[in-house]
Structure formats: structure tokens, C-alpha cells
Image (cartoon, rainbow, N blue to C red):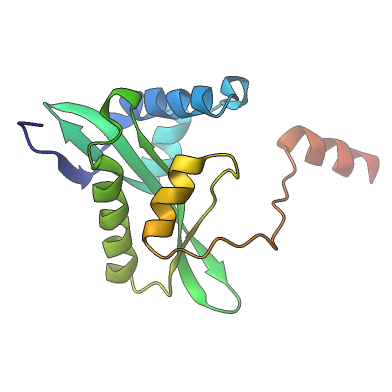
Length: 162
């Protein structure tokens, strides 16, 4: 790489490219049909009156090639934590150290924000990501089971209670 990689705070104008990267990740994870987010929703949720996430982008040759998106969570045991939702590096740029730069920037933000730590998830079949996180000495916890209810499920459950 002749030109350096720049890591910077994300801006509203970055959102169309950010959503492209999100869709690229969904393809990689074999779940493109799961992406229902839009630029408009991301703009409202990240830049509206009550922003609920932040992000860093990696630029190379004046193009966004990577993303680290995070938000805050609160642990009753440990207090304020940074939750790393996704690190995404476009396929053509993988292996060039961009993920490390984004991860390092996100860890620094965790410290700057007085968090007690940083947490995230990784798919059990994503061996390159698992190997990457293990290089940092990350704890990979097999005890916890992920749980979720989609909006439609919640509506149906709540309607049944009426």
C-alpha cells in the first residue's frame, strides 16, 4: 500500500457507503435478506436528537474501505461498556492491516470514554475473525447463548396479551 490508511470519526455523509459495507458483510455472512436498515434510519439513529451509535471509518485513496460501528451498553456487574457491533473491511482490502487499525482505534475510544471494557460477538464459523481476536488475547465465551425477538414477534406476543 503506497498511500496510508486514515482512520477517522464517521460523518453523516459517509452513511451511503457505510450501508454498502453492511450489505457486503451480510453477503459474506450468507444473510443479505436480513438487512432492513436504510440510510435514512441510520441518519436518524446516529445523527438525530438522541444518537445511539457512533462509528469510525478507514479511508484509502479517498474511499471508505472499512468501518467500526459501536454503541454503549450497561452491565449491572461492570458498568459502562462499549459494544462493538461490527468491524467491516471491504473484501478487496482485507489482509492489509485495516481491521487492526479500526480495532485499535475502537479500543482507544473505549478507554477515552471511561468504559470498563469492550464486548462484541463473532460467528463461530468465522475463523479469520476468531484468529484475529485471539491475537489480542480476547476471551471467547461459549457459555452465553444469543437471544433475540424481532419486532413482528413482539407485536404478535403483545397483541395476544390484549
